[in-house]
Image (cartoon, rainbow, N blue to C red; front, side, top):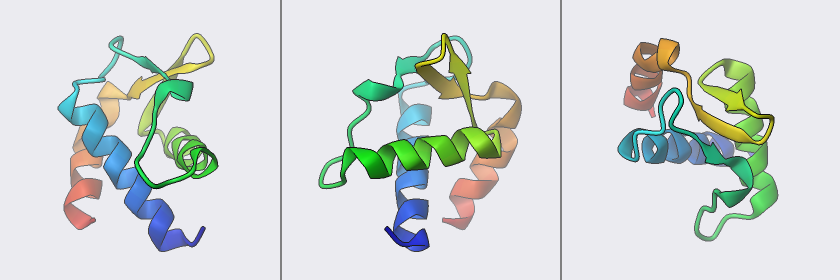
Length: 81
């Protein structure tokens, strides 16, 4: 998986979370996230990078949501992509 494809997956995940308002305490289990035509390992790697960047936060070890403190930076990131 090259860097460009990974960035596309990351942007797609962030847009999906924003559309479903998965912000703060409204969270989803990370194993339930699927992206069409992309393997699960790639999605999990993108989620790990988003957590590392601070865009996503974890709840109860396996659940994730958008970090509400990073919304401004998330919108800037998506505008660039």
